[in-house]
Amino acid sequence: MRLFKYIFLIPLSIAYYNVHAQDSLLSKQLAVDIALENNYDIRIAAGNVESAENSASIYNSGYLPSISASGGANYNVNDNTVESQDGSTRVVKGAQTHSFNGSVALNYSIFDGLGRKYNYDRLKENYNLTELQARQVIETSILTLFATYYEVARLSQNVNSQVETIEISNRRLLRMKYGYEYGQNTQLDVLNAEVDFNNDSITFLNLKQELENVKRDLNVLLGRDVNVVFEVDTTIIYMDGLLREELMSHAMKNNVSVLQDQGLLKTAEYDVNISKSFLMPNIGVSAAYNYVNRVNDPTSFLKQQTSIGPTINANLSWNIFDGGSTKTRIQNSKIAVNNQQIGLQQTKQILRRNVNNAWGFYQNSLFVLQAEKKNLQTNQRNFERTLEQQKLGQITSIEFRQAQLNLLNAQLNYNQAKYSAKTAELALLQLSGDLMLAQF
Image (cartoon, rainbow, N blue to C red; front, side):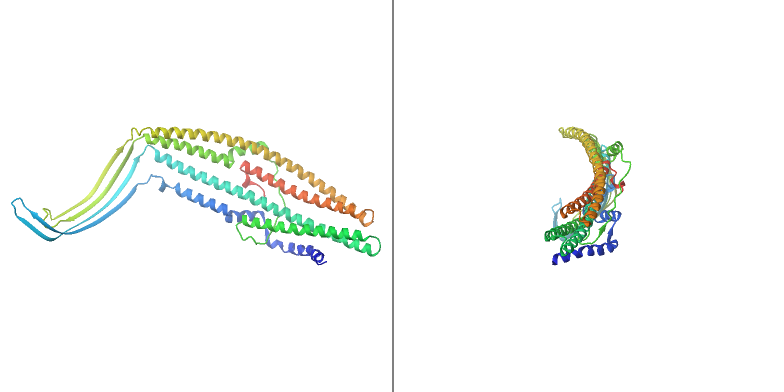
């Protein structure tokens, strides 16, 4: 009886909670904004993009000269003995020698067989690829976000449907008790009503627990505390005018996997040109401005020596034959290009299959949605008639219970179909590269 009393109060607590839920409503747009800012995978992808941007900078290209500076000092104290040609000898105790030097040098490669250019282009393409990888992470995260968001919405509506079922079962139980007191029902009727009410209450509690678990899953995807309390928007907006031919055309142009393979193909082509650059000569220039000052000991012919001034050098190197290693690199690079072309063709073929499969699943989901909607309407009318007959005592409790369960199952199936169709739509738009343009 304590359990029944507690469950009887559940609808009241749910109603009270829904009144105050607007303050914690998590709209679809707000969920996207929070995920783009806080989602862990998206934040890591943003860091990778920033790193790739740094690598694609002019500072990492080899186009800028290198400038270095150096300097030093030297100090010596020695005991020197010097013997001249005439046989005389001179001894100097504690002879001091010191020197100072400084230099500023510049080195620049004027021509390196265009390897520097193609390597820089490759770095920029790597940056583009990293951006595409980040986009793929964002799309996958958004799709996962809304799959979970709609699961919260589905379970929320299932909980509401179960609350209605509990209320119906509770009213039935009260009628059975009153009827038993006036001799119209048997004790078996009361016991059956109690069992049904108890089962409905247990189902409600299980649904509530499942809903809370999925809400925590959604909070993790949003990158926030798992215990944040919120409600979701259960309305669904489906996109009109989707055509398979247009989606297929968009997929061939905008799908992130296709764009990544195209970027990898460009990278492989740059590798061929980089390998060919080793066949060309290298021309470089260097310049320095030097300062040297040396003070000799008394035994030296020169007392002091100072030199200051610029030095300019130009150099050319050409690896005429390196044993065939460059030729091997070129051949392997060309093979890599061919393999990447094959991979691109395979990706497009798989994408065509996936778009067609997703389109078929989407159309089937829309059909199921309409069928479940009609089924719900039919069961609603059937239950209303059954309810009137039950009040008049024209049907048994078993028949009433069956009509009640049919209505509940129809509501649950319609909720499932409603959100499955939307999830199928989003998966189709992800394949076409139009996910971020979707109406959520």
